[in-house]
Amino acid sequence: MTAEIDQLSPWWSTARHRDRRPFLAARNAITKAIRAWFDKQGFMEVETGILQVSPGNETHLHAPRTELRDGAGQGVTRYLRTSPEFAAKKLLAAGEAKIFEFARVFRDHERGDLHLPEFTMLEWYRANEPYEAVMADSIVVIAHAAQATGIGRFSFRGSTADPFAEPELLTVAAAFDRFAGIDLLATVQDGSGEREALAEAAGGKVRIAEDDTWSDIFSKLLVEHIEPQLGQGQLTVLFEYPAPEAALARTKLSDPRVAERFEIYACGVELANGFGELTDAQEQRRRFTLAMDERQRRYGERYPLDEDFLAAVAHMPQASGVALGFDRLVMLASGATKIDQVVWTPPAGAA
Image 1 (cartoon, one colour):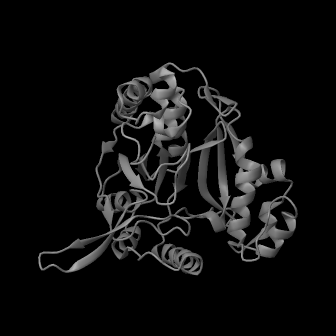
Image 2 (tube, one colour; image 1 turned 120 degrees about the vertical axis):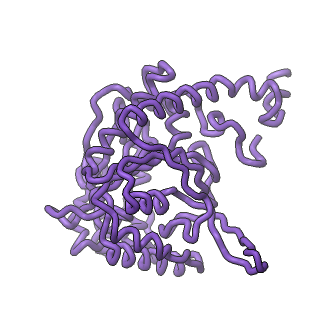
């Protein structure tokens, strides 16, 4: 009966907090270990602004917005950032070479065992280094988290992964061939996705709506057929994303059908998303505009372009960067079963 009462208590009750505290202590240990590693590597820790002119320009990311008043009482719209990426790249353009941030970020319409509307993103950048450098960093950072807690294997929903084992390196094209039987790059021409070609290849594997784009079909296949197979036994580095999914990454000179983008998985859970950074401001504007056109079509709204960011892109050095879901990493490295257990104050309304 006592256990049942405890479960009905708010998260801040003594009993409920006591149950969560080992996970929170693990969070502190991981934070210290990772900060020490970045310091040893010569990175500068930065703190960038949360309120932004634009929260990001991805079609399906939703950001909370607010109205600020200036000294004359005039209102101006600002957004809570979905990532520190825009601000961090402005710092690269200003001359910073190696930076990292434990950033509080916000995403509306997201809640679940792996999603919070407010969470911590660990993001870092290396100027004048290829994306393989931050790919290697990511593997080391994940291992340091596991070392900090002494956990031997990550576990989640019946899957396990050894964070110290040699990671699996898998291109997106190879993953689609292996797990979905699809020649993905045959549906990519001149950097664009051929919607009908992918719809035909996906035939029966996912439900396809009449207004689904190439990217929608790609995402459904990725979520349903690819991601559950990744990070099984060891980490998986999924790399060379197709050009239509490049986001803020540059395309490969040797094969413009793919981009210098990677993601890292453990136990089917996405932990990190990294790029060889795009430094072509005109191409970045084109991608943002297309994404916002699609957002307008789907959701009836668009986010403004951050002109200051686009100007900075043109002055950025060649660079690589990665965003890692810190709460998810802590969850796996501490043995927690859902993300609420590893944040000090869960979102308002959480049980």
